[in-house]
Every structure is written in C-alpha cells, then in structure tokens.
Image 1 (cartoon, helix red, strand yellow):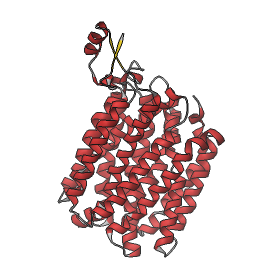
Image 2 (image 1 turned 90 degrees about the horizontal axis):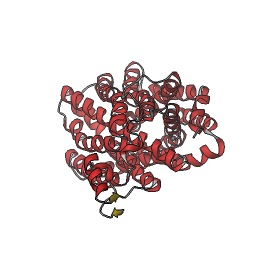
Image 3 (image 1 turned 45 degrees about the horizontal axis):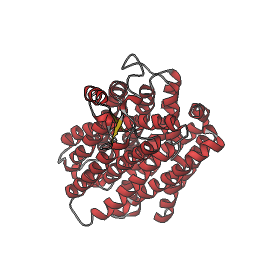
Image 4 (image 1 turned 30 degrees about the vertical axis):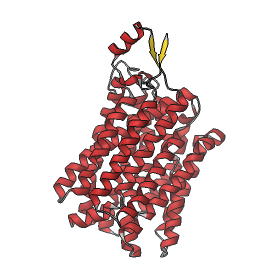
Length: 408
C-alpha cells in the first residue's frame, strides 16, 4: 500500500472515492491527535476573533437602531434564539456527518454572516440577521467542542481548557484589532477583513482534523433526549456562559456610560476579560489533572463572583478593567470543564451530550445579555451586573456535578 502524499484531508473525499483509491493500493494519510489538537485550537481561535470583532460594533449598533437598553436587549435575544434552535440539531448532524465536516460548513457560513448585524439599518433586519448569526455561532460551537472531545479521548489527556483558551485569545485579538480598526476604517471594511482572515484560517485548519468517522454514527439514532445528569451540567453551563455573554455584549456599553470613554476604548474591558480567560485556560488542563474538576470549578466561580462585584463597585476605570481581568481568570475554566463532562456522560452519542450542555450553556451566553438589558431598564446597568455575581455563587454551590469531567 502506498500512502498518498498530497493531502491529510481524506475525510473530505466521498466514501466511493476512498474505496476506489484503496483498490488501487493508495491510502490517505491520517492526521495524528497532536495535529488535530492544534487544528481544533485554530477553530476556537478564529471563532473568538469573530466574536471579539463584534464587540466594538455593539454600542454603534445600539446607537444606529436608536432604542433603549430593554429593546436592544430584546433584539439581542434573536441571536440567542438562533443558537438555541440550531444547537440540538447540530448534535444530530454530527452523528450523521461527523464533527469535522459540520465544523467546516458552519464555520465558513459563520464568517460570512457576521456582516449582517453590523450593516442592518433598522431593528427588524437586525433581528433577522442576528437570528441567522446566532444559529451559525451555536452550530460551529457544538461542532468544534465535539471534535475537541474526540481529540481529548484520542490523545488520552485533557485539552479542553487549552482549546477554550484559543477562543479567549481570539476574543482578545478581535477586540483589540477592532478597537484599532474603528479609528481607521468604516464598519463594513473592518468586519469584511476579519471574516476573510478567519476563512483562510478555517480552510487551513480543517485539513488537519481527525477523520469525520471518529464521531460519526456512534448512535443508532441521530436525535435523542439528553440524560438528567447532562441537563444538570448544562444548567451550570447556562450560568457560566451567561456571565461571559453579558460581559461580551454589555461591558463596552457599561464603560462608555460609567466612565465616559469612546467606543474603541470601552472595548478594552472585554479585551482584558478575554485575556484573563486565556491566561487561566492555558493552565486549566494542568490544574484539572492536579486538583480535579470539582475544586477547580468551585474556586473559579468564587473568584468570578468577587471580581465582578468589585468591578461594578469602583469609580476608577483602571480598577474596573483590572477587576474584569480577574473575572476572566475566574470564569475561564468553568465552561471547558462542564463541556468535557457533557461529552463523557453519553459515550455512545458524544455529539448529543455536548449539544445538550452547549445548548443550555449558550442559551445563557446569548440570553444573558437580554436579561441584563431588562434588569438595567428597571434599575441600572451596574446593578444588573450583580446577576452575574449571583450566578457565580450558584455554580460554586453545585460545583460537585463537574466530577464527570475527570473520567476517561
């Protein structure tokens, strides 16, 4: 048998073509878990870049739509609705087509769809494009997390925190680049350049993922209800990602209103928050091996609660940014550990398990901002951020449910 030196991406070829190549004595090269690990990291990185690139546009979108925080929060709910609708279906698609192929398709569409909300002139188009964007954000997220679980099992070591660290680095890069770009170019040019760069990264990365057969067709049924244990992890993930989503969508508006800074400078709050998440996630896999998932989740949740409480209680812009950084350090490892647990609770259908946890989790990520908006309408944005503090304390109280992440 002679291996074909031309490509690593044998999963892109149809089965009939692979069969004919095999009869001719040609086999396709299989990527190693190490190659797939860094390729999956790149997926998380570009996902974060696109999300971070959206941050400087949020205050501008609110200004363009000319609505109050409650109505704008409701408009953001369209993004949440798109993600929650798509995520369970993505679990079924992974079982049918494999996570690597689903990540390719949804990732490409995600990069293209980001221009929609940025250019939408009125509320209705914003909501429609937001729904589509949310569906693609959610679908790609499930696919890349499912592939991360497959790589973690293949390599027999934890990597989920590192992968989510890629998202955090991407969010930080996207927010910093966005803050610079908004001073030098128009909105559409910025988002078009970011989307094009991420498309190139995507097409390179998918060549080095594990074959789609790694998690294709493990279950006889493409769709099924998650277990009670999986739902329990998902509810904790809802609270964790509610905090992340709220900081993403409201931190720039909070800094603009509270400290009277411009939109680009206000985006630095989320940039440093993402930096804190990245710092914690690149040490998270080592911490999980050394101390276990449960102690790490409890300690992380308590640090998040204290940091957010400090951030909304001070009058100094610099102190608030530092507090947001420590909040990022705290929240960074909670979701990766819960995702890892969800993928292990249903070994015969890891795509379905990860879809259940991510559906509930990213319902929080995307529904959290509207909840903050409604609370801000009644009180103030600073007071509304105390919902994040409460959520972190609940996670700490039920952190023992994360023990599933330590099974291999």
